[in-house]
Length: 325
Image (cartoon, rainbow, N blue to C red; front, side):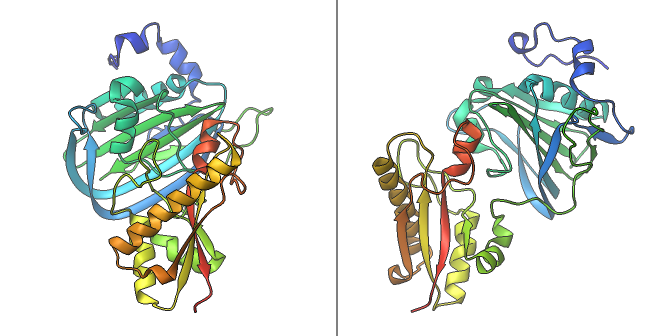
């Protein structure tokens, strides 16, 4: 198969022998093989929906997209290994091409558009996917009319995150057996997602079951406590729940990472919870008397703050059920 040139700067010195070492042997001709250390995270299947496939870099305030529709399958994996982003990405790209897909667009972090590109494209929310703005690789590809794939790989500390989005197609994905001295990975992608941050579809059921849940997908303006946009799926689901049950009250709690002092983080987390409360009031008409806001700063982390992936997971707003008045 003809080697595609991704970027002269990025791929200088990459050889097929290196690619063979990077990933374990393909299990069957139809399988997409991941590194043996890969652990499945999200598995989100939509039977039919529109989807915008990125086909160029961030420019003039937007990423060019190709609108398509069909079954949409979003899957993510965590790869704990010493491999670089490119060492994980390159074999997966080669396997996608071997399956007849033609590359539409591919880029690395700065070439894509960095921060702006990442927040313009579809990314599964943390903790099931994490993107370092300075260390990620992306591609989009098409096989035939209506069949598209996007691949996103990013490294945080000692961990790589892999996101595969398929539109109108589905590739079997296998994780080969690990060496005897390696930690045993999960053997196959499960049919049900291992969800730790609420998918909007399940937000209400999780909230009723656990009494609290993370509001997924929220995006705050850089250096600001204000939400960067509106129409977040998690807020729409929460607002629908509160509109249906007019006696229900909730507490919105902001959380931060450990960068900075405690008092400043408590103030920032409270301000972000207030921003969510205002959007529930102003856009969805939820009465102020049914909404409370508080800030916990970094007092209640979900995971370690030692690396960027953990810090991104810990920066969040949760909703907590309160007794009806």
